[in-house]
Image 1 (cartoon, rainbow, N blue to C red):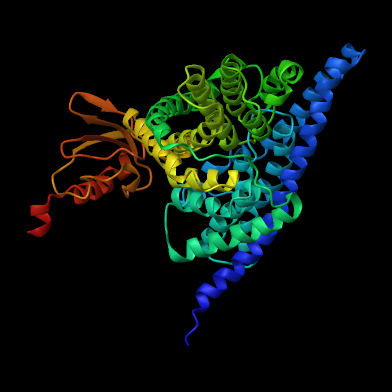
Image 2 (image 1 turned 180 degrees about the vertical axis):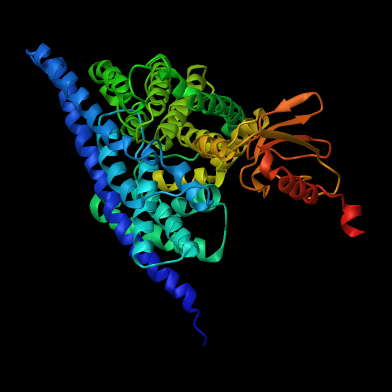
Length: 516
């Protein structure tokens, strides 16, 4: 029997990556929870201590000190800012290069201080980037070439999400569906292996109980499936609003021109004080809040308040640019939205109270699918995190409808949008000399017809400025599908105008010309 050594070698490397990433991310996850518990104790003292002034002054001084430390850490490497998922996507697409050691220690330490503070940021984005950095370091130490290094990064990303959430299958799917966008045999084999191994490491630290384990789950009655399309539409609208708010969030800090960008987290720190005093359960990524609301569903007014609070605070925290993800905050908002929808139906006698928990579960899947535009990952992720497969069909219905609503509104995957913003300065700096604009109209039967913008193999240093369809102008995004008659406006520099023109002419040849 012939043995495929390439596959065996991939599995062997994935096992090593899974062990290393599992140790790093499990440590990160454990320390985040430990630090968050300490901050909750501080906020509790602000309420019960007779020396409230002393505790408040000490808290503010500590926040200023931690802001300075975080600022000094992230100032040295802009690739550690934010979630980290767009950076990993950029690496795998060959659009970005990072220093893995710099990312590893900076993301780890700064992430502990920002996420552990109770800011409404998630650990999953940093965990994915930490996993990718660990795997990249391993590949570079072994002297792997560029292709194998990308495979290592994909393995590390899958292992990072798996260890962060205890979801190995979802970790694999997220890499295949959203991050790498390929179902290559070696990629899925390595990603799945590393994710499973990393999960085995994490369960030895945190146990076998799913992250969002919900007891006393009931099947959603078939008659209540009629409400799922309505929930899907609402989640799609809410998800689109979250996309817009997240992309606009950095603009909120423009009034702080006197304060360097890497110190903007002080605003988030100070805003956490009233939340820590009056609503400490709302602090952090949101897992504890989801579990609390699953067992004791709040009133409609409380749910509305929590949704507004989490939406605004998580947007501000992410807009500050510090290490921290939006993965778990998205799931939290989805769960709260599902709970609110269910509570309203219960109020009018249209849903049994026991089924509010079901609405929370499908709400998480639908909201995440609408924002990330990764519905398969959303469905599997929630099933693994909740520890139940009984809601697959209900989650699929809501996820699909929410996805279609955002797609209809022109929303694109949030991590792809964030990557585009990261790359924009480099794209503009690549346009040297006098800029020239060229325009093409998509020809019938050409390679441009029915192609997604992300599929276009454009030369380096070319920027799609706009796409005109009829009387409407569209800003380009990766999901936009070109149609015959669309007018593309491209921007490039004068030196390579002729080369770009030739490439675009070849792409835009009509079928008759190609066959002739």
